[in-house]
Structures are given as C-alpha cells and as structure tokens.
Length: 414
Ligand SMILES: Cc1cc2nc3c(=O)[nH]c(=O)nc-3n(C[C@H](O)[C@H](O)[C@H](O)COP(=O)(O)OP(=O)(O)OC[C@H]3O[C@@H](n4cnc5c(N)ncnc54)[C@H](O)[C@@H]3O)c2cc1C
Image: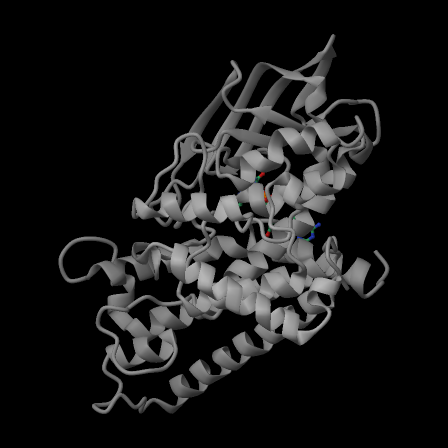
C-alpha cells in the first residue's frame, strides 16, 4: 500500500480535496445527468454528442485532472489513484450527483487490456486518446456463426508485407456506427487448432473497406450493427500480444467486459423510471408501485407484491456488498478471473427480474409502445424491459457463464 493511502487521515484529506475540486469544477448543468451502458451519457469519439453541452467542459476538466480513468497511470492520461482513492472519488461524485465524465468500451475494455498486453508504443498511441475522449471504440468479436463458440470465428487476416488484409463479417457490434476504432478477433492460421489460430487486431473504422450496417432490435432501437471487412489493410503493428496468441488477450478482455456488465446491471439505482409522477421516498420500485395506485397513503396493500419488492431489494443490496467486497480485496491492476462470470450472471438475471417486476407493477401501462394513453416514462419502461432480455446474452450468455463457473470456479468435470 502506498504511503499516500496508508492512513485514514490521508484518505480523508484526499476526500476533502476531491470534494472541493469537484464542487469548483463540475458545471451545474451536468448534475443528475444519466449515463448507462445503453448509450446514455458521454461516450466521446471523433463525432461526440454532448448532452447537455456542458458535458464537454466536464469531460475536459476531468480528463486534464486524469479522472476520466482515475486508476490508470498518469503517463497514459490517468489519475494514478490507488483503488481506495478511486473509491473515495466515486463516493464524492455520487454525493454531488455527478455522472461519469466519459463512458465506453475504451475505458472499460480495450484500455485495461492494452495496459496489460500492449507495447509501450501501442499504449502511447491509444491510451490518452481514450482518456481524453478523442476516440470511441467498439468490439468485433461475434460473427453470424460464432457467438458462444467464439473460437470458431472465420474473419480472416492474411499477411501482406507490413500489413494484414482482413476479410469477413462481424455481427452485434454495439455502437459500431458511432465508433472510431474496433478491437477485432481475426483468424491468422486456419490450419491451427481453433483457439491457436486467432490474433487480436486493432482496426481504424475509417480504413477503406470497413462498412457498418445498423440492426434494429425488439426495443425499437438500433444500438448495434453488422460490420463488414472487405480487403481492409491493417498495419502489423496493430496486433496486440502475439500473432496467433489472440485468444489469451480475448479472454482477458472478456473478464473486463463481464465486470463492466455486472457493474452496470447490478446497480440498484437502475430499474423502473416513473420519476415524474413518483411521490415520497423509497426505491424506484417502491415509487413506481405508489405511482400506480397501491394505497391512498402510498402504502402497498398487495402483500405478495410487497414481498417481491422487498426480496428484490435485498438481493440487490446483498449483490452490491459482495461486489464491493470482491473489489476491495482486489489488488491494483488485478485482472478479473472467472468470478467475473459469476457476477455477470447474477447482475443480468437480477436486472431482468427488476424489469419484469416493474412492468407487472405498471400493469397495462407497462406495455405502452407509442401514441396517446402512455407517457414517455411508460414507453421507456416497456422498451427497457424488452432491452433487458438481451442482458443475459451480451458478453456471453448465462448458460455459457454457468459452464465457466462449473469448470473454472467449482472445478467440476466437463
Ligand atoms: C445487447 C447485445 C450486445 C452485444 N454486443 C456485442 C458487441 O459489441 N460485440 C460483439 O462481438 N458481440 C456482441 N454481442 C453478441 C454476443 O456476444 C452474442 O450474442 C453471445 O455471445 C451469444 O452468441 P449467439 O448470439 O451467437 O448465440 P448462440 O451462441 O448461437 O447461442 C444460442 C443459445 O445456445 C446456448 N448455448 C450455446 N452454446 C452453449 C453451451 N456450450 N452450453 C450451454 N448452452 C449453450 C446459448 O446460451 C444460447 O441460449 C451482443 C449481444 C447482445 C444481445
């Protein structure tokens, strides 16, 4: 443990400095702005959208301080904070209702992967572009015939001098139409055993031959795309790790992805909307129940529903504490192991339960799609409920996570 964080007095000093800095530097307009893995908030990139516009100032000030990536080393645009200091910073931001200044797969997935596997040149090229919000990333893993069995992927990269020529098709590329770079898995040795012929490659989406087609979902949105590579020339310097050694890098990144998903969907602040008409205190589920007329005084007269809400909230709380304990136990630079599968399964199943319950509480008003009769929150609730069905698929399905837990956590035979 570094001297800076060895005592609680040093940590408390950091807390008051951080609070003073946040109060002086966070624009009032960004307080309470929502951010989520589903695209809300600031994701940066070459074509950023800042909503409200003050998000730009917020991002720039936090990036200059290194606090878009608080625990990354300062030489790569991070804040160099210890995990304890980062936790204090997050607590102070939450107390002031400040959103993350920047979100995305750069900070959550490829950044940590580059810190572990990148060369110095690759770190210099990509990490500050991420922390400053200049470049937005997407993930090119899945293919039409390779999802759970990812190692069967067929997108090919053939060496041609100082370049690889990439041909193939990726699918379900989240925000592929808004991203600037993609981290992709490509097959570089078709004759090797399937896991052994894969290479991890970074590709600029503006390279000739890359095209992207949005796919419309059941929720009505199109957050993901089909990404096609047609004779795309990629410098060999863009290989991360070893040629044909991409599977190791890919698995490490999946650990970061599953932790990100668990964080995003396990949080109890999520859940039903209904902010406009909600009354009184209590969680969002309780507020939603009150909104839909359970009891004049706001009490819930349906005992079964009361029980279900209480159970879900206890599950959320227990999960939150477990994640917190695991995070506290993790050392700085800790690479998530198979326990990230455990958290991923639990958080995403919990999120699905949360939306099922929200829709049941709202009754017929929880099934609005468009038109009069439903307000914006109700329409959003229906769409979020439908979107939540994908939670136990993205980042590897629940069934696949259970296989990993059985094998690598519990040590059960194949
Ligand atoms: C919202 C969302 C966002 C996504 N974003 C991205 C992205 O940005 N980039 C990207 O590359 N991919 C992305 N994906 C794709 C995702 O990783 C795949 O959908 C997932 O890995 C499952 O693959 P599949 O859809 O081909 O299903 P399949 O692999 O065909 O699985 C079908 C069913 O069979 C089950 N199954 C398969 N194998 C086994 C097994 N061995 N044991 C038990 N059951 C099994 C699965 O659990 C599932 O129920 C996203 C998916 C979603 C839903």
